[in-house]
Length: 366
Image (cartoon, rainbow, N blue to C red; front, side):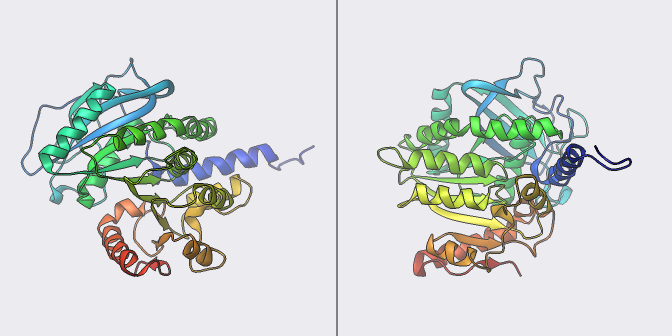
């Protein structure tokens, strides 16, 4: 029996999970109204920028809310879409900030708004990538895989912000899996299983993009729980004839909510040759610290100190480029996107070093 006034083990666990979700919310999305967010807005404003995001998803199409497009429920196969986002002038927002409308339709002079939103067929996605490559002279594709607690519109807006603020020279393609985008214990466990459910979908998307002759290079950016989906898709690809393929060049793992022991096993199974892996960690990531407690006390990959053993030797042996973001500003779980200018400078510096002289120790932010 539980002593009077004491909290049961079940209640303590539920509270722990709730606290973890609350701390991680700012870094993973969700929490804002979704009604009408993806309904196109006709109003325009001077000084805005536009980012067109192509999307592939294992989510079920939402028939109740036209402004959401896809729900958090699971679909039988991949579906596709294209959404163009208007981003307000630089003086109206801080770099790294996603200024969502408090209510639709939103003001393009001050907030992110949707310019167009269309459902696509598979062949339409391929055609859109080809057209973008020819029009802009871009032969690179950037695939983003979001984390826990993201609705479809959350993922679209966050990716648009990343592309705009980083000035990424690639065609943006979002892979979005069925996260329910809500803070509840059942949603956390549902999201984890949805990530497992979506591994084959991401593999299918990467194969589809790589098969396009207009695409010469694919870079993958994963955040939080999205790293699990990404690593599992790469693991699956690595055991096929032909393996992962040379077009997938760089895989960026940001704040990965992945058990370090599981990561070791995944890397061994993926083997070589493989894409260059860039790992972004923060030792003050409270969301990952709580995740560590929830999942049995084994450290999460995104919170390790890469200067300590055994991690330093393991990362050097596996030729994993490590970026320690602990000293950067912003929410630890999301700071790679909030201080993205500094992070992009670190990446450009380190990749140049890696190409010339091989991997070094972890790069720490000043």
